[in-house]
Image (cartoon, rainbow, N blue to C red; front, side, top):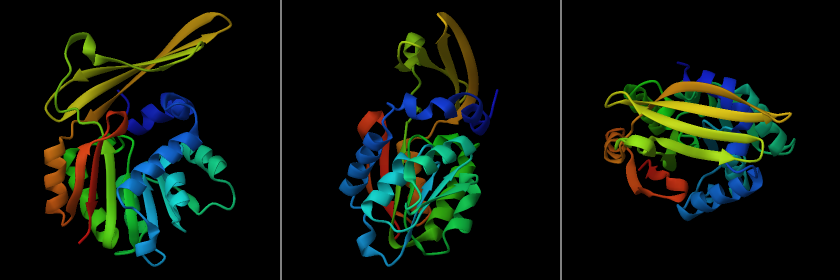
Length: 251
């Protein structure tokens, strides 16, 4: 069993953008529309930083830059994905990549009360090792946000277990690649994610597999933890791609 960081570095980082559809510009525009629809804008803040926790290859970071934030801190544990994001962003982008753990990065990239928005999207939050870490992170977010600042989280609610063959989830395929996910429910707090990547080279198929634990975070539980951290819930519903969208603000 690998950690989430090891799993991505060893198996998924090289295929991350591909497994999301392959078009980073289209993905960024989709995320920009989502954030804009939630009312996220730099206009209500003076020089506030935007923070993307678990940025991956950068769809949300690029969206935040496109919305007009003049400083975007893109945090991830994968150097491969950060390097890819830097290539997408270009030299003149306000996006700066930060190689760090999302649980400890915030105090280093945003001083108290300086962040206009913190996003943790694309099912990143369940990668934390324990539910207590989620509570810790929400406290860090509350401290980093400026008054009126936004928190946007998108994640999959895995609290209701799938049964039988419903646990096999096709992710993406093309003529030379096939990525399938299998979920194994271990206990009330975690699900084991098994990713199987089949690759065809010179007509021969090979398979690589890796597994890591993911937290089962319930929507009601997460909303309650946000309120306990001093955040007000603005929006809490299932959104695009089956992701649950939580939008909260610091009063």
